[in-house]
Length: 535
Image 1 (cartoon, rainbow, N blue to C red):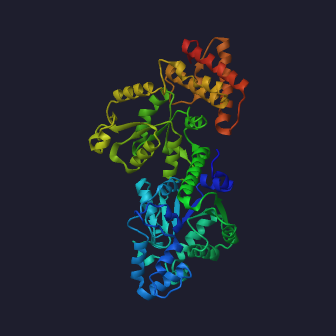
Image 2 (cartoon, rainbow, N blue to C red):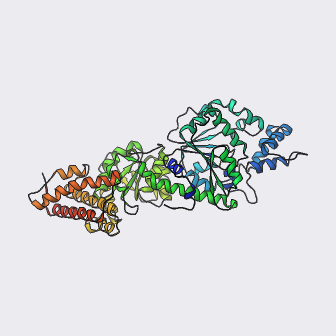
Image 3 (cartoon, rainbow, N blue to C red):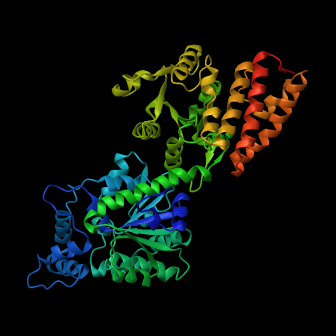
């Protein structure tokens, strides 16, 4: 894919984003992307220092940390924190669109030196589960399924941990030895991405003091995102081995530029991440090789304890309609963070089925994600729990099943719904021959996959083959006709080509694709006519 800013992002960094090996380090400049009260100006670190300096009589401003330190010495720590809270509009700022696109990247760890609550607010707004670390005592708590937000310099809810003055910076490493070691260890295997920092920020120097004191040159590469940076700015960072991603544009458009920057990274992740996934579900692997507009992947969103029951209930009717279901437990991916994996599957699926039983918080987050992507969504619920749903969900069309009773009506109505939405039409087999359209478009790999998909649909409808593999199905077939026997032999051979397309990224040409499609069509015709039977 091509993008306005993508070309400025090194290929190795793009790969780290895909592999979930990037840790963002968010500074004061990032807060300038927030929505402030009318007439208010959001200050970065330097601006904050200059503002505080105006409260100190007969003081000539030199730098931010000097002004903040002097104010505390003159008027007390309490007054300094009160002033910062007022000047930073800590209770009035709201996250902007840039915060949302940033959080859409689903980092497993976010580090920030900011005192505000904008990242937390955004994560809460998007219902992304996270745990917050403000002190070393919380580090041992395992949160591998959540985003870990590390607030290195405290916040206004933890004023005793706020790092503001020269003294705070001087004692930071000695006072936070475990946290400093933890942060250093992250950078042995992860790539650091600085956002919202200028070189003059004291936070940069503290960070490099932590890393340098423990790792020396062993840390992985670090990057900083700047807009329209001058050669001098770039040189300052690169002297500290921080590579500059210098985005073109007006500095005044910083929020919009960052928003698009994050959006383009998200597109890369969505496009490439499925290639990194390992599926225990063979049909899901197949569907992800199809063009996005042609895949028939259905994401099953359900409480974990109901998945086994729902697979038995849903998978046969989905397979019969040419739809390939996939659930969270059938997928393994790099940097296993559940929200990121879920988002990737939802992004790739052409439709979803969501079980609302029990008002599960994770499922409600997934439903919000699905709705934001305008995916076709089928809502199901245990009929004994439908009355406990929120009122706005009760008013939607719900397919109700019974966990312990007969579900024939549920299966029949779901089947009718799927046919009505062109996801599989028993009475219109020509509508399922996607492979002809894909072949005409020159999508030969996809055409071969679609042809085998058509064969599987034919077999499942004729002989109720649902839970066995294609090869197992083919091995059960028998015929006395020499031509049909030859077609069956060839299809078994062609299946290896299909597997190479799906698993080894092998490409087929026009002639080969045409031969495979022709052979499969002949075999399907013989199956439907009864010339081929089960042994």
